[in-house]
Length: 429
Image (cartoon, rainbow, N blue to C red; front, side, top):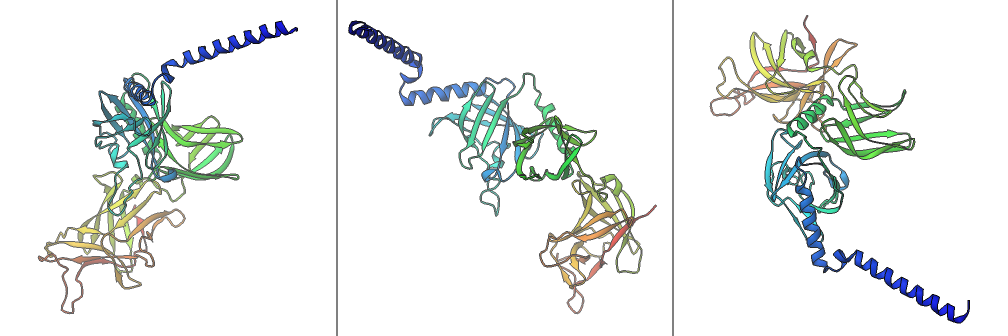
């Protein structure tokens, strides 16, 4: 190439590069020609329009606790005209609450639930004795978005969360009913993790704290999960043999969660009994040489049993609680009405240790009744609530008109009845 041709070639390339650069600048004109403040304003407006574009709302995977150390919750959110309506599995799954919201600039586009919402804000409130509460957020940085997904990050606790557009025609009440059905079915804590025909491990899915814990091979997972209307979604996937498992469907028939070839199946020990098993007539074994009958029937509140304690031909009404995760009963301290009307202020059933000669407070200590299949009886065990002490008895302390314990001439408590050294109870056929 001679010098003249080389100059022409270089001039041609320079012109082409200039045109190319102008074209690129023209493509981004709508963004880069705007000042920085205006660009953020536009993003804020776009995000707000996106939020309000979902006619049936969004479902939010909401995680609490610093570094995802607490549980996961599911929120249904509908944004319209500066207000947000919410439902969720925080307290009452049937409750709805509407309050104000906004998308503000701050250090970047931020979704702010700036009006108190009875569904959302309890996750971010403080509790008595717990200044951080559940360590939840009500302000979220908007990281990025597509038409159907909005990725958020809590401003205070920095957990990342996801808003997903609900399918058109989603009925919120039906969604929450499905979620409640899944939660009721997942009432056992221990699960077997089965891949194909191979049982890999045993782990836990604990509803009370909404967390999964399992070790499979060399990998250990401890993380929150969110309950949906069809199953659960984990915060991050289980990775087994290079395959990811994160979205599980609940199967009521075999009480399992399934994704493809991985099944998480409820494990029921022989000691686990359904609440209906406990209904009926029982005989309570103590160190007293007398027959003590306990009749159990369903209580008016879920997972409670109303007990009629027949002692010395007097019927005392007590309340026991049923734990669906373990299948055992718990007998706590509690006030008891005096059917004889001898003690005007009634009776206080107080946990005690006959071995140590100690009475504990009403709200401290309890006994578990766990079924022993081999012995065919429900053995009584200390619940372990009082460090360094063992509950093995209950004493019915009598109270007088002055709302104080009744005492004898020596200043000792007067007992309406006692249940010393409770050992077990057997079912009466």
